[in-house]
Length: 492
Ligand SMILES: Cc1ncc(COP(=O)(O)O)c(C=O)c1O
Image 1 (spheres, rainbow, N blue to C red):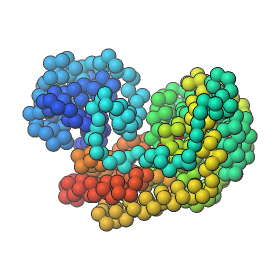
Image 2 (image 1 turned 90 degrees about the vertical axis):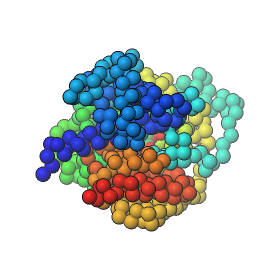
Image 3 (image 1 turned 30 degrees about the vertical axis):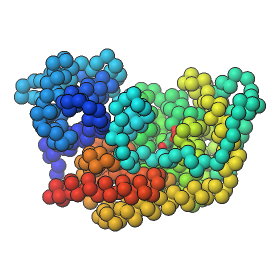
Image 4 (image 1 turned 135 degrees about the horizontal axis):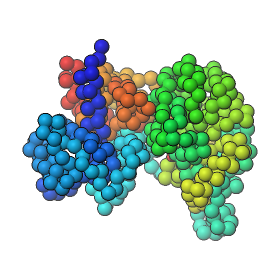
């Protein structure tokens, strides 16, 4: 049985890992290293990463994790103590005195994945995280290159998006195109049921804003998409996780969770990230029956549905009639994340609520992006879609072959599409591997970001196969280096 001391050690190691991800790139500028480290720690405090009174890792463990002399870590803490940001309590450690002027309530700013995205888009004004980092932690298309060609002029805008261009519902033609797509997927949809959103991420936020009050319970798959976890936590919800296997969410545990009368259930039926599973027909029927029986609002995320290697099964929503189901999706995976075009599909009365809430968020998505999206949907034919999926499947094969070659003990279930694999390590050392990976120039995602539970899946990492083949090869070699570094310890 695991004793308290062991679990406290595991907690500390996960906490230290999360802090190290925050501190990434701390030494990418010139100057004395203790000052750079102090500045980086101060930034994490100012961002509210630590609660006031929180204890920092000891100088010894921070120094070991960052491969520094202990003196450098001590000098960095000394500086922050002198600045009044930290205090030392003899015999107990070093603690945060004040959260700083920029501090926000904790838990509002997403996981390390979100922070890495924010840092990497900060441009030349901010210290960049490791410049040649191979990021296998974020499952998004690598670039806009393979998108079909489009052409845009101000005249096109005047033709298509007449008037002010503010449109909380979205442009009519795009809504029709999206409704047609949903209809071919097996859920008959009129354009009056579609709200165009700024990515599927916003569609999830709108559903949360419509349905959730602080303290409500939301049921999610465990593991799941980290952006959904962050959104529901921001809304003040408590999360309950339900396990997933290679047929999708397990319906026995789901039934138990729904019997607790949660305010919302969020599921990825086609395709599940990070496992790449597609919910079986039998389970789709069971989930629909459970949702109808308990009358639990469902958010069904189809953001990855266009990347299924096989056919796309009808969404759960198709079996739920007029029950409150919001199906959300995106053009980010079919075309490019930078478009920031997604959608929500719901019964008309709910769609109206979503459009109203959206208006309070941003008054409407960019008409320019929507016009581009219209053209892309009109031009992308079955051949383009087939080519895209074949390319991504080839990248999966490259990643899988490189893993088998360099890390033959690692295991995973082959995905049915999508952009990532959920890899099982032979030892529960995912957090240590993630930290060592950063030192070797490769980032991976762990359950720290992907699970609603604390200390879950300590033997799992998510690897994206979206980058080009050469990057995947190099990324796996770096991971093998990181594994070798921690391997003997983990095996012992
Ligand atoms: C399952 C899932 N849902 C939603 C999103 C958000 O997508 P978007 O770029 O459309 O906001 C993502 C993006 O990675 C995703 O993987």
